[in-house]
Image 1 (cartoon, helix red, strand yellow):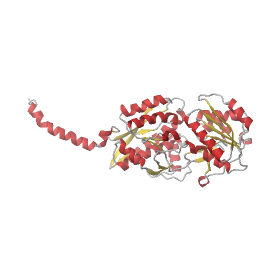
Image 2 (cartoon, rainbow, N blue to C red):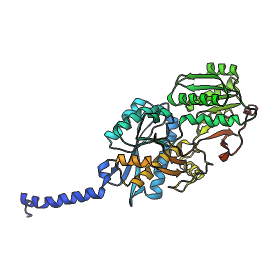
Image 3 (cartoon, rainbow, N blue to C red):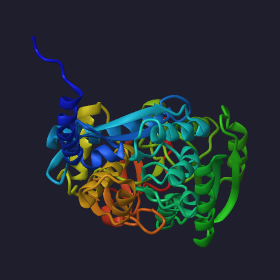
Image 4 (tube, one colour):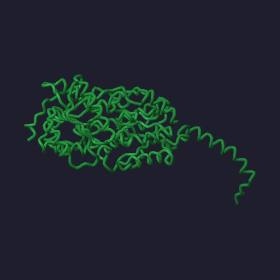
Amino acid sequence: MRPAHTPQRQRHWLPWLAAGFALLLLAVGPAWQSGAFAQERVVRFGAALSLTGRFVDNARLTKDGYDFYVQQVNERFGGIEIRGVKYRVEIKYYDDQSDPIVGARLVEKLIVEDGIKLLLGPYSSTMTLPISKVVERYQVPMVVAHAATNSIYEQGNKYIFATLNTIDQYFEGVLQAAMEATPRPQTVAVLYENLLAPQASAEAAVKVAQRLGLRVVYNQKYPSGIKDLSSELAVIRSRNPDILLGAGYIGDMILLAKQADGLGVRPKLFAMLLGPTHPSFVPSLRSIANGIVEPVQWAPNMKWKDEIFGWTARDYFGLFKEQFGYEPDYHPPQSTAALEVFHRALQNTGTFEPQKVRDAIAQINIETAYGPVRFNDKGVNIGKTMAVIQLQGNVPVVVYPQQVRERKLIYPRRYSSLR
């Protein structure tokens, strides 16, 4: 019979057990301490996304861009290599239901209950603004890919970084492209949704239009959830603007295009804050979509080459389409770039402590297939500019600026070809 362990024998082994546990902690290192990584060497990011609700269409594109990075980094490299150790990447998602209050609560849950200290942004400025306050309170870094409103970055935040250009730049390129056309436009109408990003884009557009010498003949907002824009469009038709700018989310922009066509609203240039490059836009509108213009953060003909994966923008386009079955607009590569910021920051700092990761992000200067990423002291990407596309033959082509232009802007828009 084996002798029972006596208290003396137990005390004999205690120092050895303590030493072994200390060695285990040393081997796991910062992964054990931060909560961002599991012991099996997995780095976990967290995101609250609109998997249901009014923002679901664009949030799906956001998620696909995040998931594309995860698949590619795990399959190509076995994860992120940090000081000779590879960490596979996972993302924990919660559904914020397109509700800002729910989104803020879920981000707090990710930080406090799930122990995740590396955060990815939601879709839209409306969702991001309240979440940014949670992130700042807990002092954990969040890289935002889809919140362009300037006011988010004017709060003195230190832990929020954005890969995209801010909202004040969206319609500027559109209006500048129009001013180079013949005959030169004289008037502009602006119709926007009463939400943070659309309103901010409209306000900036009016200032740019006035600076360029355009006369603003209509500038009105409409309530969220509207199902009929015919009253607003009737007034716009009576003003006969050369340029019509629509600022809202995808469902509203499809509605705007349909009703403008039905009511005979015929601006020489019809531009939207977003929509024409969205996968559902052309299928929903068919010939009505042709000729509509959109400012974009990215296009596959851009001359960028990704320093982590070696992709060109065109390579990214093809690989993404192969994986997800649709052609990406700028939303997915914008998401992928957010994770690449974390990727390089983790490699540069060699630690997972949130403050040090935040400091490494602030110093980032990389080129991705989405474009260069470099932050100013407000956390805004100052490494890249925007472009303008027009649907020509219902295919998005870059028409501005000239150095990346694929075709010339068709101006005035050709309405005879829509029937």
